[in-house]
Image (cartoon, rainbow, N blue to C red; front, side, top):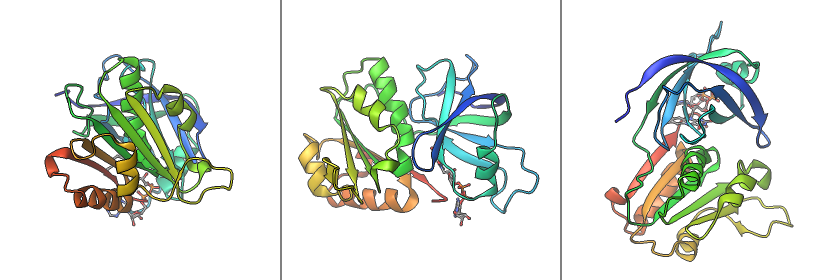
Length: 238
Ligand SMILES: Cc1cc2nc3c(=O)[nH]c(=O)nc-3n(C[C@H](O)[C@H](O)[C@H](O)COP(=O)(O)OP(=O)(O)OC[C@H]3O[C@@H](n4cnc5c(N)ncnc54)[C@H](O)[C@@H]3O)c2cc1C
């Protein structure tokens, strides 16, 4: 297990990655080691924070193999934390504690891996998928990502570009434009059975806003998938 610590990190850049989501790239010291899928706690200097305070948790969206930066991705909605985050400039420092978590890619797993992402829940899977691609892992993986509109589809081009024989990437859109050619509607049993070769034997990783994570885990459990085949990372606040 890697030990966690607290450190300050400088913002290198931020970039808009969907209608309301931004990726924040921070300098990464070689001492900061983490496993694909882990998260950090970020603390900002906020003069008058709202009742939720000046810290939030974020999955690390960059892979451990991306040595020059550590990236997190979030939707900027209304909290004082997010407003302060949106105003961060290149060179500004934030406090980071971590890494934390057991929602991690098990490279030794021989069963197929099924990743189910609801919206912003794509973040830990971007980390794991890029890691698997860089390391040329042989694990069989299927990443399902569900978004309301295509304009919300964070990392779409990048993940499509690394999809290959042992890494399938399926996007489903609940409010599609007429020209969307892919899957539509929520992730459901039918889609899981259609795209996942061996659904009963797979290990399921589910990440997303609380209500989405809960409904996806209910779907998977209703297929008779046992607790030891299921890992969940649920994001509060959405
Ligand atoms: C392990 C982990 C990983 C995460 N990864 C990401 C990520 O990659 N990207 C990302 O954008 N977000 C992630 N989150 C969620 C993140 O920490 C924020 O909660 C979220 O981004 C919303 O922040 P906010 O400031 O916009 O709203 P918040 O102020 O956090 O939340 C808005 C409202 O939601 C409710 N709420 C929030 N938190 C709680 C709670 N704990 N219990 C009950 N009610 C609550 C409150 O009513 C609050 O007013 C993660 C959370 C966890 C625990």
